[in-house]
Image 1: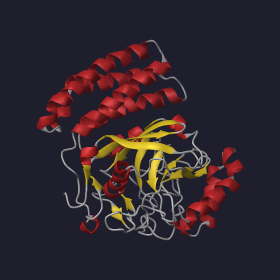
Image 2: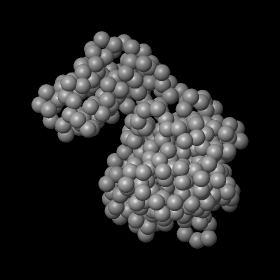
Image 3: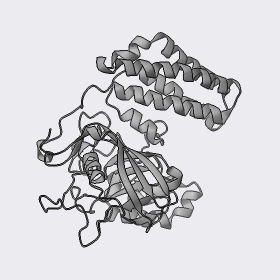
Image 4: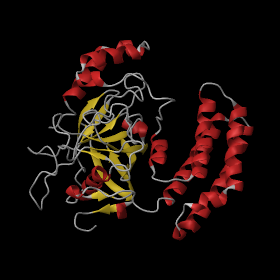
Length: 379
């Protein structure tokens, strides 16, 4: 069965060995030890990215959308900032300021918000704006009452609407996938997948805008029923939960038409790039400081597993990343750029935390976005 790589295993052992150091708060010491002990990682600069890394999968998905609309990004930021205002100290004045800014954008910049929406989707966008204006009133009421939980709930509901508005702004697929991968399924957009496990239900959004080949392969396998009944085969506390190894001697998906193992290239879209990098880790490409659009900084990231010595050897096995800030600090993760993240769990994170090796995916199905799947020969 394909492992997550020699480096991955070494990192796991190192994390286990020094876990008590991390829980004492000596994260930088551990990173120095890892950089000295892991040959490839020693080349990685030790500087941390500016600002706080985003650890919410929904926020990462919003930011990953290929759109250019300053007004909606300002609206998004003002709402996202509310959680920061309430995280350590309850700065209700700051919350009120963020709400006022969001309200002003909705009230005075509606034309700007609609400018990026293609004409056939304008009516849907206008409906979302009306819902956002109504929601702002409820958010303001919760803030006035200094009800922290209700304020965060209303904020979350509004950000879901903002994400839907932003998705309406995507006019076309932003780049051409290299022709050498035309024999593989591709996801030209996004899809939502529901997993029913023996412990409960999970829902994940799969992002073809950032990883069309990886996401397309996954959605195609979900549609085939490939994952139904498969057990989780690897579980590392606070690190990964892996699944996708079919019964029998095969370690991945064998296409019944070609009778060949379907191999998926490593696919990583870097912030600022127009298209993904294929077939090579960011480290091997010399891009040590570059950050992926879809990073390993959120609990419930979905990523393609592969043999450690073959960046293009992934197939059906994938893993859920069990982000733990002390063990895998955001922005300093050894997996970023070495494995392809292709989505995030948005519902059922509490179920994900209960799953162990031996538990099963009872069923997996696409509940939204199947029209974005492009099968080989149909593009």
